[in-house]
Image (cartoon, rainbow, N blue to C red):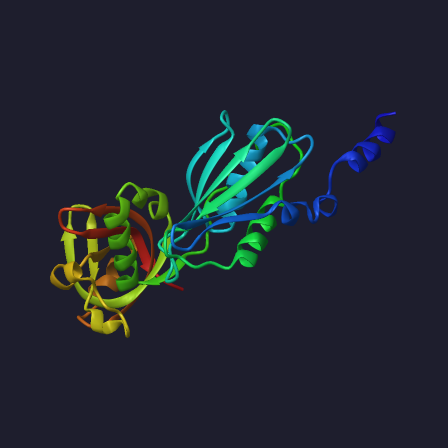
Length: 268
């Protein structure tokens, strides 16, 4: 009997095709670029608990490279952020889940920002259509193993902007993430913890880079603490040599405006 019931239960579960179109139909846009625009949509997945919805959306967001600012399975809320890039300073997405399996997404843009509603709708629905029925929350997904490729000057610029906006966001956006940082060798420092190398932060190394007035006086710097097995390589470096290192974002020292990248190795 058990074997006969299983196929029946599978047929009763909603599939992605069964939900197709629902998310798009529920999509709304309100406001305007002058005051800020809100984009919202939702889907209902029967058999989906609040805790499972929050857990699944958390994992979906991580796999898409989004930052998880806060997640609460009890209240059914999740606050996500689309990582900052050249087009925007970071967009926050609010996700809520209720007991009947309805999951809602809401994104607000900053005042003066322009956005493509169709692209936002497609992105939201792509995430929501990945939800599956379930009671128990899934195992939390880890961050992407693929390093984020970035120049030292660009990383410093992004961190500086985050500090100006809200320093509390630094850990959410950067801490623990693996970066592949490119640039040029400026010098090194040896301490009890090992050897660290510094990137040359001259803006001329990045065509088109225009530092802020504050950065023009005191640059945010990037330091890579080398792994113990990289000491030999580090000793061969000379000023101006090209650097291409992979390491983990450790911390930001506000008083000296210094970014610490740990366990650095030569990129392969």
